Amino acid sequence: MLDHWLGKKPVMEFERDDGYRDSSDMASYFTGPKDWQPIEREAMRFVRGRILDVGCGPGRHALHLQRRNFRVVGIDASATQVALARLRGLREVYQASVWRLPKGLGKFDTVMLMGNNLGLAGNLPRMRTFLRDLREITTARGRILGHTRIPGTWIAHHLPYVKRNIARGRPPGLIRLRVRYRGRVGDWFELLLISPDDLIALAHGTGWELTRLIWKPEVSPADYIAVLDRR
Amino acid sequence: MLDHWLGKKPVMEFERDDGYRDSSDMASYFTGPKDWQPIEREAMRFVRGRILDVGCGPGRHALHLQRRNFRVVGIDASATQVALARLRGLREVYQASVWRLPKGLGKFDTVMLMGNNLGLAGNLPRMRTFLRDLREITTARGRILGHTRIPGTWIAHHLPYVKRNIARGRPPGLIRLRVRYRGRVGDWFELLLISPDDLIALAHGTGWELTRLIWKPEVSPADYIAVLDRR
Image (cartoon, each protein chain N blue to C red):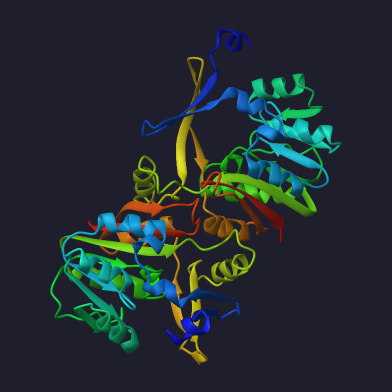
């Protein structure tokens, strides 16, 4: 808040392992639907039943849905984010990693993975385990709403990265990055960005089916939200 | 021309093997640059040296370049298209299939594959042979300008087709189709639509490298033109 008074915008910076940096305004993690990406607003139409918000951060989507009387549980790997979401009023929120989902939370009808979180588990073997784990904690009409991006081959500073991945036999959109915020530097982690074609195959092999793609290329050509339903 | 006087627009219809039909106004094959897709106009900036226009049709791009004093050779599998292009003033144009490129035409600096022609060879083994053949008939600074589309997973009538391909182990964007025009029906043929990621891998294995992607998602989210240079 002090930053706000001083006229500084707090910014979270993403550093990719080839030195490329991108930043995102911290304020965007605290916005309501009218400031979301249009695909995020659209995705809310496909939410149903009891919801798990994976990588919920300070609870931007979860709080919106809780206010609309959905039963929402948030999880986040960061204790700070969990504390923030709780402070902001999210009733059920726990610290947990996508590599080890909490077991005692019951079943969910919808699992949300917003803000590029679909590929949070990282490489393909981990993604397969993660998607199978999600199947275990969802009901028969289980659904995933997963936000990701197509690898940016048309962008001069992304194409060489994608090409290097492919030459090394890695998935085109597997990126290694870390977060910088107010002088602190987080650990390196892997994030998978995946095209719809590749997602169809990955989903198919793990008990899911791509039933709809929410994409507004005229607004943002890379971002999309996949609706995956249990097969 | 008579159609024009009668107020009928001659239309070429594409029929996919699942029954889906799409049509394209014949007039579009005879237009000048101002009526082209913006990515086609943009692609003309990357043409250099002696040019081969593969699947030239009535010569819309080839004639434009010939007028600008490029040396252009057109080839097309259809004798009718070859005759049309010649009639319209294209000086060098031959009947030839992408599966058997003519050998006696010398070397080219640029090979153009416009109008979705990049995937004209069909399935992946044929595409590999085709791209290797193109390498043989290009100079050391050989370049391909190839127009294709990303498979339309966000479109309700394309998603099941892509999913079926993937379930069968076929490339996501391999489609089987035939052309209908004035009551005549052509033979079934295969056309490969390919995403940039998959194209990077295909090119890499056949002596080419994707150096630039011409894409204007705000105009047409599926279409792009790849610039492939010899490795």
